[in-house]
Image: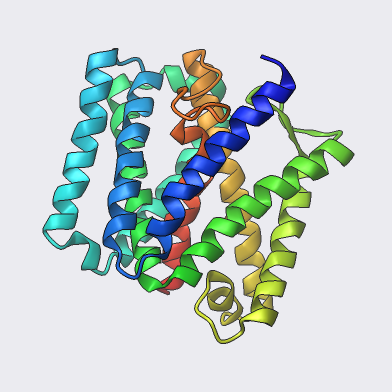
Length: 278
């Protein structure tokens, strides 16, 4: 496919997604947003099962089963429960998982038992959805501040890497990433946080919450969150390489799959909720 056709496809897909997601995101009550993102969770579960060796039928049932399970959690009041202990556990799991996976590399992931790989990913995907909905319950501004952190880190890293990238960050996992790009992403997020706090000092946002810890801890927390957004991207790239796949699926023309779009959010969302509840 020509580059111009690919770009047009990406733009069309992005516009369609925005046309669906934005009304749900800005709707006064949580139900439309929770329901729509739950559908994305079904798709992510299906993709994860496929990437870890499950057949088409089994993968479909895994995705549907994950969606049904989270719908039951929602129905029985799970979205209104305080989940600070869960955010601590999930945040710790992400740090340990990233250290082990990135140290062992692509070959090491395939050596793990398939059942363990499957359930580990499904649990982390489910927890990311819970964190996203809880962030929206805190407030639209808080959720947007988390989403924009990840998006700014990704965009600034892309352009910084293109212009300055020389030192590969993880050449065997994601050859396109560089240390210069990662640092550019961090600087972009710091500028975003500073601008947000200056513009909306009294609003409820992740940056305001971090700033309440003091300048030093706020900067260290931003460094940590940006690093974990990179980790989420690298972990998904590692899993795809282990599966021999370029994209998690082709559900989103021009963009790949759902996991390709939300990989950096998977660790950041529960960690943001952890900071919000400290």
